[in-house]
Structure formats: structure tokens, C-alpha cells
Length: 121
Image (cartoon, rainbow, N blue to C red; front, side, top):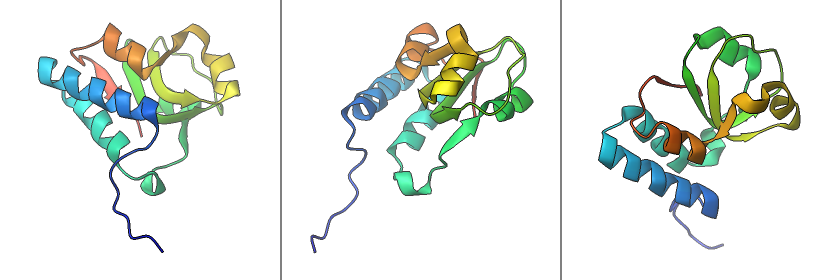
């Protein structure tokens, strides 16, 4: 059996995303983007499968910019006026959220300073 050490994520999209997050942190001194980058670098065995919409509804407030560094699942409804960025989303979540849903790359472009970002894990 090969003895290997964890060297970070192997997904090329996640690698580029971490580099983009770290660049944004260096420019804007954003703690939120640093938290997301740190979370994405961790091994996947300790991460939850995803966050349901009802949890986002319960935690977020109107006008928040919510970032979910895992997947968004479609259980629940969203009535608040918020923008959501995630790594990936289920088909039912994409249908329910529609235009409110952004990728993490789009979120970094839209809000490079990380102001009013609420990270939900």
C-alpha cells in the first residue's frame, strides 16, 4: 500500500478557486474569503454533505450575501432577499433559488472585499 500524505484538493476547479480566494484575501484583507479558502483545503471526509435551503432561511437576514463552501440542497423555501454563492447546488435547489444563486467565482468578482458576507457550513 502506498503511503501518501494529504496535499490538498485534487479537483482543478477547487485548486483555482482556492488560489483566487487567497489572492482576494491578500488584496482586501477579507476574513470571510480566508475562512472559505481554509474550509476548501480541508479533507472532504470531515465535511458535511451540504446545507439545506431552510437552514439558510433561518440563519440569514435580508440583504446578506451568503456563502456556502459545500453544496446547497433543495429542502425548504427561501423568502428573504439575499444572494447565495456556493461550490455546487442540487437540481431542486437551483430551481428554487434561480437568479439568487451564484458560483463562488462570481461571488468573489462581485464582492472582492468580502463585506457583509455570511458563511454557512
